[in-house]
Image 1 (cartoon, rainbow, N blue to C red):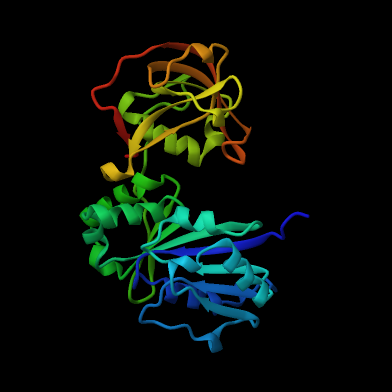
Image 2 (image 1 turned 180 degrees about the horizontal axis):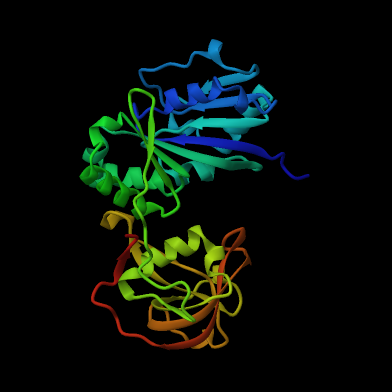
Length: 321
């Protein structure tokens, strides 16, 4: 029997970034009432506390995870069962990685929405610290919206340009908003032009732009569906790509050496057996959006029409900005 599907609404950000306030205001809005009982999982306790008397709907259970060891599928499933919950809202600990959460979700729990919050008075300090920057980008990568509270501290062009670039290192899809003390909100409208022509018969991805293309194709795959791309990549022979396929990609860095990881898309190619691991190649391929096991759903899948020897670039590691 398939597991019952439970929608998960996720709020991420560092301690004192405004997560509790955001969730409290959301729970006070009758429009957030789905008719289901709600389990609110709190993974860190700040100075602000929830006022359950102001919640606009009944049937909410608030549970606290005092330690990361409690973040496991068995415990989360029990908490949801005890609460008879039809949906889950999580206030996530800013010092825990997102992969830790996704690995701990019980079967059937589906993340519906991710909203990030950040404190405008500390955002730039965190942005310039490698460790905190890495944790911040980890949250941005999954967020649909990043809200900078106490935005008076970053209410100038230089600060907002820096924060815009910071968020774009993790996601080109995440919206950015600035909330001020009087309750007013301003939305980021800084343009993000792509450094390549998506309307060209063959979209040429320059070496330094691979990370930007990878992120954009991952965020908006339909934009590239049916189109042909050409790029420099390294060969990754992996069974995960499927029979007759490999993954052409690059090592990419989000913010520091510890974050370097190999990224690429599965690619079908008739001569895949002749490709040598980690060789540099120039790939010309057609992009199709379809099901692949590597995504556990639909995503960009390449079919190579031409593969040529490539030259090792000056900078082997690419970035997402």
